[in-house]
Length: 155
Image 1: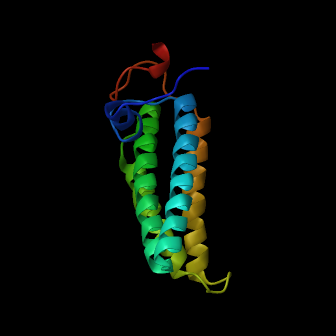
Image 2 (image 1 turned 120 degrees about the horizontal axis):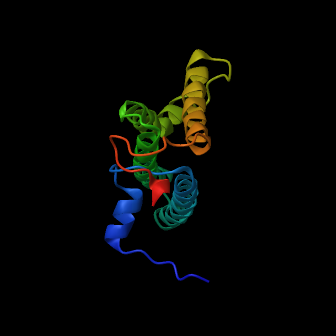
Image 3 (image 1 turned 180 degrees about the horizontal axis):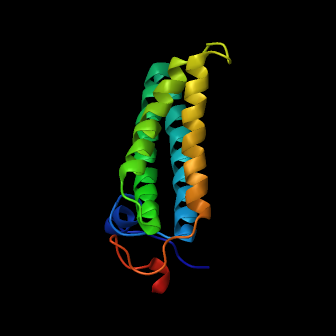
């Protein structure tokens, strides 16, 4: 079995850089890695904060901070995946804004009727983000070099 370890520079390059292109396979693997890692960290820290401090507000705050860091990490993957498709950063910025606002939006519609306009807008934004990520997982990148770098599959 391959020994898996990353140094700080390698982690920054793989999960917090907007430079270059990223093909489908690493995008999918890194997306699942980010989601699993941040979910585990959020659950552990939430439990520790809630258990030690007894404050749901503090635990919610920690979960929100972790959620924002997760969204930023996924944003960098989305940017590089869009670069592989030959698109700029505009769609990724839309993803980032929606992604950062999602926890706050879901919190703001808590307790509202399911058929209210506010709940439907939040659900539509959530659906847009999920559909974007699924499309990025399925659509093949542009062959050959583009303005964002050489084809990652050409290496």
